[in-house]
Length: 275
Image (cartoon, rainbow, N blue to C red; front, side, top):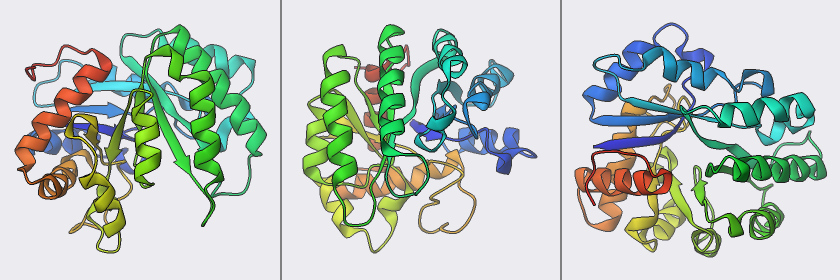
């Protein structure tokens, strides 16, 4: 059993073969996929939900859930209509999370104050709809400001909700992970944990408790070794699970069970994964 906790199924790279992609995931033991609803901006937030509806009840397809949110790069487009649309999406039963949202200081473009303002607005909407949040945080090179600002905003505007969330595609420090865990966040690892040069990230993962961990692909990005450079897809979450299992001294199957349970507990979702 494996849950891919973060995949961009609405990517144009799946336009021609999404159903085969999902069938391969099921054949690889993936029992659920969280489809991320950010699109190329607020006008496309609904696309992940539409994919969930399209494949709902189809035999040979993993269980699908959707999120909806305004990505940091698109926060300059977050007008009143966009925020109303987000609130409406988060009321849909298929949409179980708000995200991915957060801060990105790596790319020039959207001012940091705009990102912060819209991040706060989205946290307020998610809290009203009682949806966990999926966090994107990407600092500029050798600058910790992005993480400092993110954790400060979470502490002020989210910790008190007790809704928690996911640090998506985690690649930071043990201290940052622990601060987020204290606010109810799970720590999700993607394919980069298999990259040879990222031994420091594996050392962080080794020190995290199993009950805090999730696995993801961030598909179609970040394909794991030995598929690096190829289009990623949910079936490949098995490679990340195998590496995380190796780090913690257990099998990929055991990591699959553990992370599926962690996902179910976070979202209070009726998955048959035991206690």
